[in-house]
Length: 138
Image (tube, rainbow, N blue to C red; front, side, top):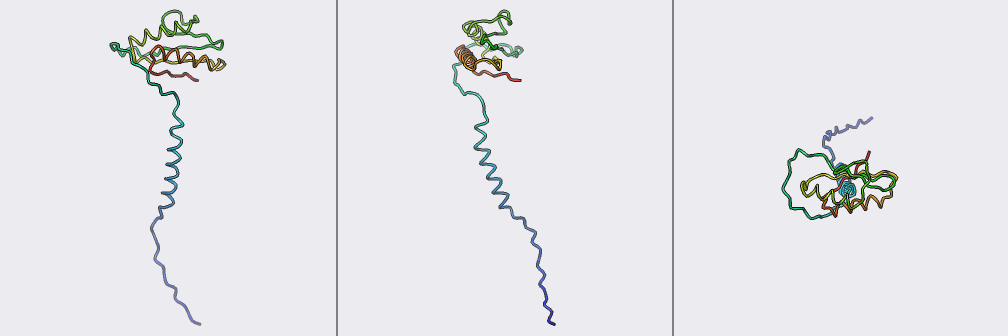
């Protein structure tokens, strides 16, 4: 019998990184496509009010609420439990923003209120000079 000698192969210790690069590029494309869709809100350019800055001690936001019946409530300038008209909300917010243009405005809308009422409130706040409006959720 003839015995064949087997050649011993040298072990290859290199890692093939091409599949990892392919996966990384696919993930990069996915994130580049989905990232702009994740941002919420409306980008609106509003005019700034020319006013002197006020002390930063006043960090409490102005909260405007819309109840299930579509009535507006504002937590500044009067009884916060009393419904007010859209003009009153606009006037009070304009006065607050004239003294503190960086004041944060938040809208609390009941989940059963008509979406149109919340949009109308946001338009009123924009007309009063609000640079941005936040929505409160639970």
